[in-house]
Length: 98
Image 1 (cartoon, helix red, strand yellow):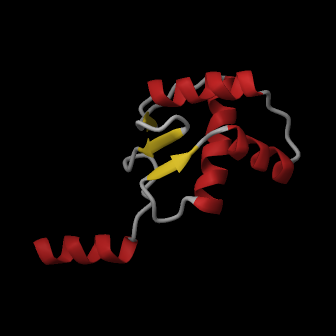
Image 2 (image 1 turned 30 degrees about the vertical axis):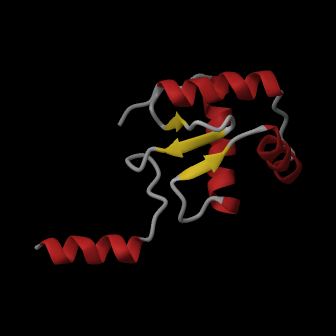
Image 3 (image 1 turned 30 degrees about the horizontal axis):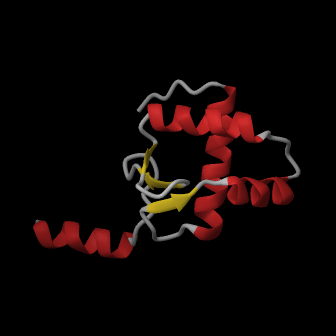
C-alpha cells in the first residue's frame, strides 16, 4: 500500500495511531474529534491546529485509511491498514478454513 499523505495527513495519522492505542483497541471504529486531538496534544506535547487536523483527516479519508461513519467525528478504520481486532480469533478462523 502506498499512501501519499501531506504534512497534515501525517500529523492526523499520528493522532489516529495514538487514539487507537489508547482507546480504540479491538474496535473497528475510532473517534477523531477535537477531544481526541486535545488528548493527543496534552500527551505528546506537539502542536497541531484544529484546521490542520481537519485537513489531515480529509487526507486520511482520501487515502482510504479511514472512512466516515454516520456520527460526526466517528470513523471506520481500514483493516488493511490497521488490523485492530482480536488476532487470536482471526488466526483461529484462518486455521478452521484450512
